[in-house]
View: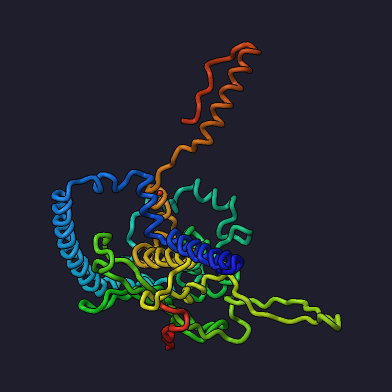
Length: 393
């Protein structure tokens, strides 16, 4: 006869195994998505289709895949055009760099540009400048207000300060370094090679690091993913390679030293130790988080996924907006254009508060003589250790 105690123990182990299997099953993202789709009603119609109709749906999906393959070739040709026209932009960007850094002085013909915002001969504008002490010795003086200024002082640093996406990354200790930033370039991979682009940041000689150039490469996938081909919506960044910065002694702004007090368990003595931890800095941009390898069966956690998504967005922003329209971000004109792309949305909570205010106004009007009409309501996968060596000049 079996021992009752042993039988109970075996049953408990089996229950634990079942619970673990259920837990693993329910933590599967695909299972959770399927359940969510059921709750939202998605997929129910397809499930209820007759097998003959489902067969036709498969044929339609196969046609869709062929369309996406053609779309992929379209994007490859777009990339080839980007490479072709990049060569035509390069001489213009080189001249921009020379003017910004004071290597050349633009000619009179170079400066022929009618601007609605400039009112140099307007007496009212001149009076306003005097009152604000612009160009004087007061607090309102800017780096470019001096006649003896070289080039356009703090050109790129000003852009960093003014663009919200970049200013969120910018720390006070980054600013002295970015004053040495002379240019930002984008380089595209040659047609026929895997699609990618490189952001290159060029610096003048400085006291912070020995690199004259630090860069970051974004690798892209321009064809449908074999595991989920119908989700293809165009080229997407799949990983990025950072760059090793050769910081000079004591100048690394990406780390900070903290002091910790430790007490000995038995003796009771106390000692202070120093520990290096990561510090907030724009230059962490060149040390992206590691991307788990699908071949090794590793999964990306939510925090890493969010960091990489933001990183990829910033990479695109440099490539598509900042580099081509740098002067407009410096003057603030591009910022106004970006703001125009967003529409204000009604705040539901705010509407409720306005309704409450209206009710209070009604009560006040009932309790006091009416003075007028009622006030109306208020009606946008590379590991960090596998970094490429930065170029030095």
